Image 1: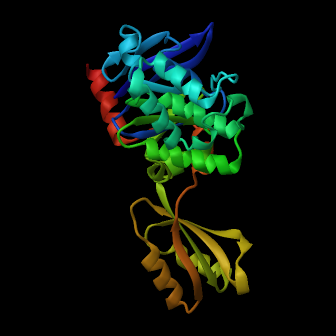
Image 2 (image 1 turned 90 degrees about the vertical axis):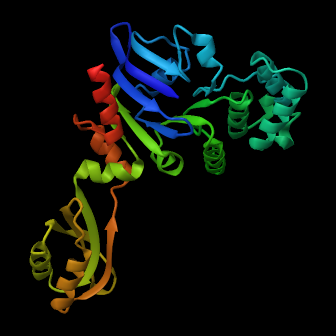
Image 3 (image 1 turned 135 degrees about the vertical axis):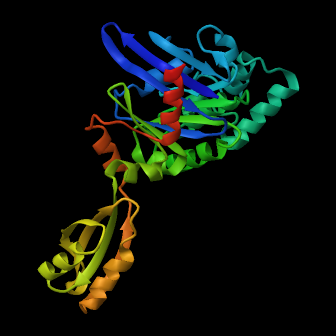
Length: 330
């Protein structure tokens, strides 16, 4: 549905993005994650045709965004980081205006205005001037205009920035509900947003892609190990020595926090793909120590993000790697 091939964009001598390639399938919700200034907005503007790339190609629904721009744009709905609203118009007037720009007419136009107002929960503000709306409700109006023409592709650039926590939750729910038939790219620097909304994530740093994978897969692929935490009561040195002897264990570290009632917390790193919890429990029981908690834990998205944005080694999922190999061979 969306395909970028070796996209590079210079502003003067400054490379905003460098040689980025990825593909988004129909109905997929993709998170485009990176710190401020990483190149997220530039990439979104290239996909939507607002900014031409210096090098490379981008296509949407089979149409090249440069050579067949109008055809490509008909498939796209776009919510930029700063929503372009006419604040002297009412919500209904603005949405009708945007619908006409998208070549909607007559009953179909009025039907779509009613539908997007309902989808975005704007019924109460139908005849309200946009200037009277809060930032959160203005954001909803922006989303409404982006879907009024029923696009196949929806690009949302920082959709929850600057709105209050309640509106953030409601906006995330709205975005998730838009997935399925519609292909979504959600550009954000907010880490929880990706894990809550997206099926796959691309992490971009300093204009280059450093990771492509499902959020739940990134931790294991990055660390190359499994992590287990446990709380146990007993002599610390003997516990560490015993647990280090369990097959597959690479390291045992006592955490600084001490859990309740004299239990100590330990973090164990094991080789990827090896299940060690049964052997850990057996070792503890054999030594007659008290076990309070034993669980496998994932690497947080914050840890992943920090590791990747300070590392030079990119991580890609297997499908992305195959796509790259095919492109190279062609």
